[in-house]
Image (cartoon, rainbow, N blue to C red; front, top):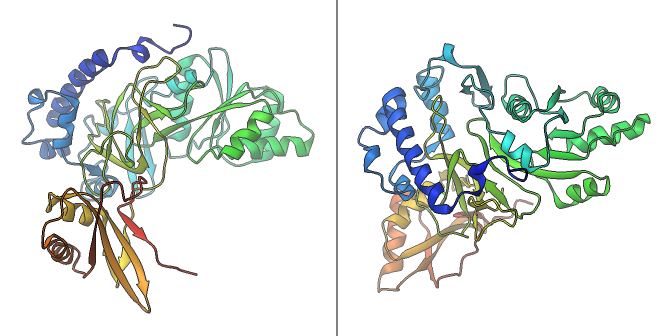
Length: 411
């Protein structure tokens, strides 16, 4: 097992699917019974009737905006929690405001798995430059590193000179934090004549790791991998040294859906990342992250067998304003839902003179007489705005997850 964190990572697809289905049924039953919000949302759901993970698509998608609204109406957690606040290990706050809790367990965010894949091992000293103040990022990394048997320097954010001094004196082998702040620390160390060369590995999150920055770290002798995590879910997916893309964590279920809907898209198509966690204290079922990604085909070269995703590919919330009115991806999804001939659609917003114009580009399976006019009527009914409809062949629209494209020139 020296190459893997545990035996879960190399299970057969059938064994993983079977175990995950059992865990999902248990989570649904638990959430329905112990969480007031899910008691309402899952009132008509019978968990034991689930025959496969694909049955998740029958459930509603839960968005962060809905969590904020629920928590404002019923503080502090909107009834989503399945344990009392006083039974939690920690309680956090995120912009919104949005409150999250974690249970009293050693690695609630499951970050040890990603750290192991990035080369961290027991006995390493880890410089943690994520925030410990109110938000969970620093604590999630801290708990994962200590679960793995590492010592943690709780550096937090800012104070680059003090952090450079800590690196020079304490000689950590690893760094965790945002991708760009490691460069800030190393550049400050060089400026002060300090030795920052002890850091040879890093796991980064909370921002994009651009190829040029990864290459610069490689030139400095630092192997940097990235992971995708959120305050609400903990670890979702992580890179491995032998792989392109990210492996899905063993403690979550990932779906890629068409933005604005809960409809799963085919593997390889870009869509919104929707995640179901299996943590009992604060269950989140079909939680929409607002981020775009895609399922990658095949298995990882590293030997881990779980699903792979492409990583972060942009934001899914493409809401825009047309003629003074907001148009949402959910509205485009509603138009598609009402016309079975539409396989895929994209609303393109342009400018003609001093007026906004909308064109709904539709990939269709067949072109019947009057179809374009019928779709245009539905578009007007749903969006309360007039637009034209262009019927196109399959494959005409780019595979980038966009359902609303704002093509107006702002400069």
